[in-house]
Image 1 (cartoon, rainbow over the protein chains, first blue to last red):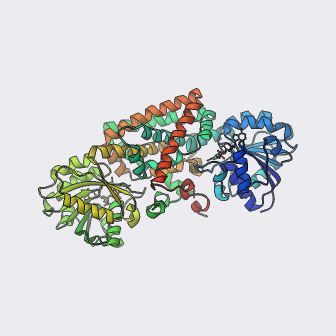
Image 2: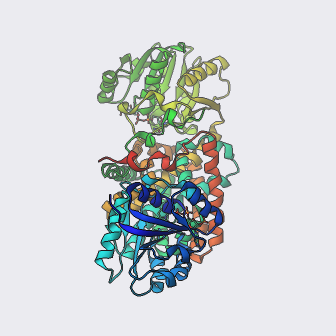
Image 3: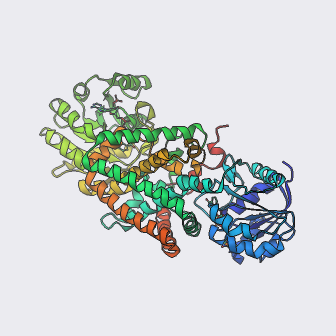
Length: 309
Length: 309
Ligand SMILES: NC(=O)c1ccc[n+]([C@@H]2O[C@H](COP(=O)([O-])OP(=O)(O)OC[C@H]3O[C@@H](n4cnc5c(N)ncnc54)[C@H](OP(=O)(O)O)[C@@H]3O)[C@@H](O)[C@H]2O)c1
Ligand SMILES: NC(=O)c1ccc[n+]([C@@H]2O[C@H](COP(=O)([O-])OP(=O)(O)OC[C@H]3O[C@@H](n4cnc5c(N)ncnc54)[C@H](OP(=O)(O)O)[C@@H]3O)[C@@H](O)[C@H]2O)c1
């Protein structure tokens, strides 16, 4: 793989940024990687791990002379960061972001981007439940989708170059309208996360079932929810606050369906339950056939794989 | 490991029964394994795979002379099977079951068990999203909990012997009151399953997001729900119909919490969301420390592990 950008600046040095840096290094996609994070601790960690060539105490310094600037901070911090760096952006450079919500980021960032700078919003559909500079690894994006939501008037050459970088990271690129993106992720990511948080919260509040029982017997289904509900609170607070409408829309539908199933349980309507559970199976088959998950039973976690002793 | 029962009869030859058979074989826990399933197809499969020594076309024949009879059929079929085998049970033998609900099984089975036969209800807290005779494997129960809910008057020697078998399968045994069992599993298993089914159903019904988009982008959280929602419809219909009260109790609490979080999103109450998401993290930590799940990011599914190409 050959160099795509001479100088890349990463603003935010957490899971996504550090994974990008590791993969850019491994593939030789960037000549120089400059970084900035809010705390001195994270900046030092980036230097210690070694995924940045230089680390800067302000975002303004980090973006100086960069050909690509990646905003990899929580969605709620994008506007503030954009305002800070705007005066220091090199003419002709590209700014992208990796936020999980696109509408709110476009609203907060686009008006601040100076003439002559390309802003191309993006969203890597990859992640884990961990965060911070120590959580990154080069394979994170491999075979995953990276959605770009280019705005009107985007320079095709700049878009093409960013696409080459993202593909170099191992991801598959798709482009999408901003609003449609926010609806899609509300279904496949945001609503499932809120529901997982809720279920874990319910278990946490039970008085008649002790938390040691919940922990011991979690393998029965609940532990999958706990993994999702272990994700970074700041990131997810920002996601729900900024993709509010789409999330509330999906949750409204969820409530309707859940009430229908609750009613079927109460009425003893086994046929309705059986028919519903049969339909949902087909989606799983599609996901496995599309190579988006493993077909191994229980994600391959069975038996020894999970033992600690 | 030495032989615990001379002759074991498995009624039902699906995931749980076939996994038990494989593990009993591997550990030499049973002298002879007799089996029965409803369809000739499953009975033939058990013979072809070879996890039964003999297969019988009726449950009555299968239990003849057995020292341990394991009812491994859907919860809704337990009563009918118990009625069929009752006259043929060997005096002094033990009957156990592996149903996911205990109250309803005890109600359906206990009254039919003849004097001189021990009925000890049980529930292995282990499973996958697959079912049928081909889905079993010996390691399924390894390091997993197997709950026994002995009734009043159970012979301690019979209980001890069953415990030895279950431990021989690799599981850890705990005993519990029937009603408490049903509440615990409603929290850690039944409610999470219904919620997963519901979320997958919602996605399936969306018109503005195509199912190919849902499948493609499922890695963002949704695919964990689809795995759970791919479980056997008959088994789960029976679970919800027979553990109705505990499940509706938990779902009621779930609705309350979800409404509270929806309201926080609508009102833009970031502090409440952040505090909620921070608390739920602790439970995940407990589960990993208890050895009940892997700490590997995203269950270790990242990058290549899921690639098909
Ligand atoms: N995690 C996922 O699964 C995932 C997936 C796709 C997209 N995303 C998106 O990617 C972005 C980053 O997520 P992440 O998982 O990488 O988060 P993370 O691991 O928590 O890292 C966030 C980084 O942003 C920095 N930061 C926060 N506020 C800042 C500010 N005002 N100025 C400068 N730096 C600031 C933090 O610095 P300190 O460490 O010094 O606090 C940290 O380095 C978010 O917008 C998220 O929505 C996440
Ligand atoms: N799967 C799990 O995750 C899990 C975990 C713990 C406990 N359990 C419990 O274990 C039990 C069995 O579940 P499983 O996953 O092993 O199910 P499974 O793979 O679907 O197998 C069920 C078996 O029961 C047989 N069967 C159904 N009705 C019958 C009848 N009237 N007479 C005789 N055989 C009959 C079926 O025969 P055919 O194949 O011929 O139809 C099949 O062999 C259920 O009570 C379930 O609640 C399941």
